[in-house]
Image 1 (cartoon, rainbow, N blue to C red):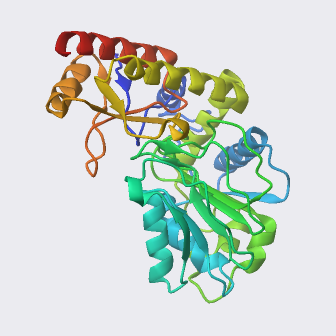
Image 2 (image 1 turned 135 degrees about the vertical axis):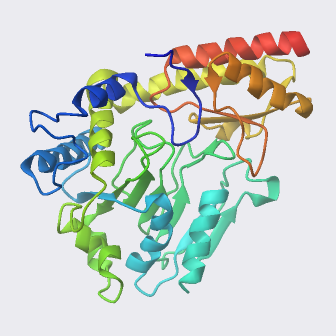
Length: 360
C-alpha cells in the first residue's frame, strides 16, 4: 500500500485506517455471503443486522432513551434544511440563529416553503466569525434551529442554546466529537461525510413526540413517519454508506472508548494546532473569535496572504493535504475530525513552525 497522507479535507474527510482495512477485507465476501456488501439485498437478514447495530451504537454513544428514533436518510444535511420545516412547523413560525453558510441555507429553504422563519440572532456583522450570545426565543416558535459547528468559518457552539420550544440542530461537522444532553432536542441531524463515514447518508435523530407533528399532505418519502415506521428502509437505503457508518461507530465505541475520550482527543489536537499559530508572532492569524474556535475546523490566514498558496503547496508535498480554505472565504483550514490522529496535528504544527521560520 502506498503511504497514506494526513487528510485535512472538510468532507468527505479522513476515516479511521482500521475501518478502511476492514472494508477492504470484507469487500468481496461479506461475512461468508459470497457477495459484497454493495450487492446484498437491503431486505436481507445480513443487512438488517447492520442497520440494527448502527442504531444501537448511536443510542449507546449518545445516551439516547427510547424516546428517540434513529434514522439513516438520503439527501444529506441539505435535504433536512427543507424537510424539517415541511414536517415540524404546525402552522407556527420557526426560529433560527444564523452563524453562516449552512444556517443561511436552512433559513432560505424555510423561506421558500413560506414558513416565515424568524432570525433571532446573526453574526453576519463580523463575517460570521463568532457565535451570537444575546437573543430571546419566542415561546410560540415552532422550534429553534442552529448549526453547532461552522466548517467554513471555524466557529462552534461550546454550550447549546436553551429554549422552551424544541431545539433542532445541524451537527454535521461535530457529531460524536463530544458528549451532550440530547433531552432538549426535538431533532438533530448530521451528514455523515465529516465525522461518521462516507457521503451518501444523513444521521437524523428525532424525538418521538415530534413525529406527531408530521402532516399527511407532503410527499411520502419526505415524511419522517414514513422512514421511522420502516427502520429507515421504506425504500432502498444507501447500503454501503450505512455499513461504513456502523464500522466507524464501532471504532468510536470500542477503540476510542466513547465520546468523553473522543472529546479529550479532539481538545488536544485542536490545542496543538491553535498553539502553533498563537505562538507564531502574528505570522498566522485565526479567523474565529478565540472563545468560539472550533475543535473540528481550524481556520486561519497568513499575515502575508500571498504566501498562502505556497503554504498549501508545500504542506501537500509534506503529506499534509486538504489545507485550502473554502472557496467562498479563501485562506487555510485544517479539519481535524475524530479520525484525525494526534500525529497529524503534531505534523501540521511542526510544518507551520518550520514554514514561519523560513518565510517570516
